[in-house]
Length: 203
Image 1 (tube, rainbow, N blue to C red):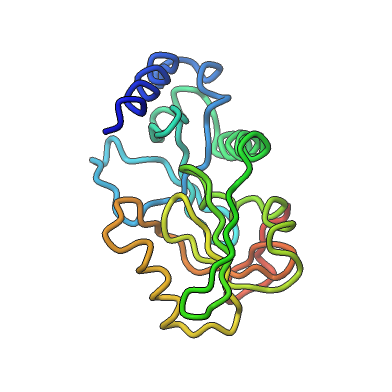
Image 2: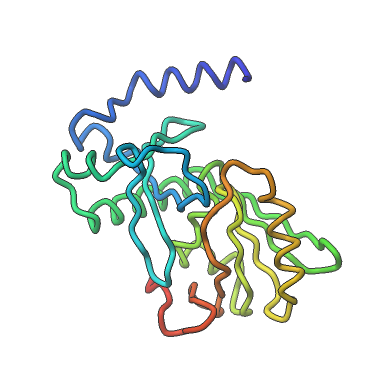
């Protein structure tokens, strides 16, 4: 591992006490979408809540280039309910996006016009913030994929399923952070499920 990265991790870890009071971690809590595979015991399993339109979202304490996952026991110990945890995490993500704008790339794999939106450790969580996606994606409907934690892909609605699977696999195959997030739809204003445009995020 890069020595500079190790130094940043250690410095951040010293500042944060996950077992301490809510006031000590509140400003560093971010949404972390559910991974497909979680190598944790039931006792240490991350807490997840379902956010419309069906996105399983966990929470992490940001320690620079990494996260420590928040468990149900931790949230209970802080006396923080799920709604407060989610609201705090989204507010923190909004501030982070202002400080570190996501990287936008327009690429054409296999001739498919694709917008790749990336952020270090939190790019995929931008599907929870339609107001951030709006100026990037505009009013044109698209399909959204969040295959790994750092990235959201937006592709034309008419793309075939086999192409979606190829795009997903290109990023997620063998990745430890492959996500458990279904394909979603950008309807030109917000994020909705593929089957029900009425269940979008309200922002």
